[in-house]
Length: 287
Image (tube, rainbow, N blue to C red; front, side, top):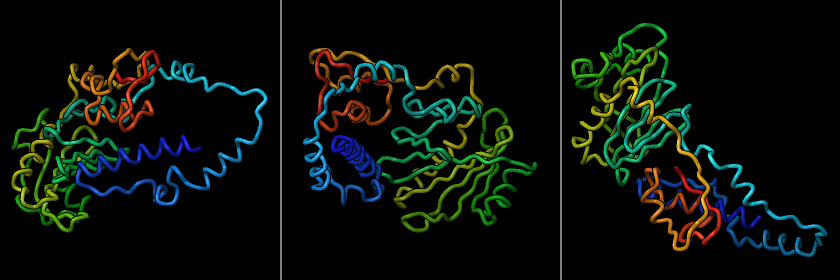
């Protein structure tokens, strides 16, 4: 029990680090560690009591057998959810790809994509909706999104959309955790779906700087090319035997994990935050 709590605590510490670097609040596990730290007296008492119980035929933990069973398991994004590769995103099932600004952190959530600027100074959110009836992107924004008073509205097809796609964009006031912000909303049609891009600057002093990035991200959407389909492959767990002198920092430099690679490698091997691989012991890597 204490070991399990320790694993969860490491994940919580990592999530807090991410939130700090991305300029957002960290919610944690619903306050779990406020009342249940890893040295919780009640858990210690339970473990101490359990030690008095005799075990006539103790079993091993079958660690190596377990690791061999998960060798090749998908890590992170699946083709059904879409695949992140650097600053690009590929979705083979929905047949689209797009690119995000350099150094922005991309989060692939079940119902949306979010990209966060360094220090959390701005963000872009992308959602998908069915078009249902054939109305223009401008009418979609007015009727389906309730955006009837857009500022500086423009037809995106006039701004060089790929594949002859239809789109519309404009500025509107958005409600954010930091208060109202003037942001950019773009709607682009691809197939039978409407892709809705919403971007705003948390730090209002850079609003003019990031607005072109919001527009560039929306304009980058296109149908997958044959080359991109080969990139839309998931990462997988690879079990290896650690060598003498193996270091997570070196593994991270070779890893396809595009953010927090060293921390994530330590997490999945229960060596967070500063542990290193033990020679000749099986560990998880990502390929």
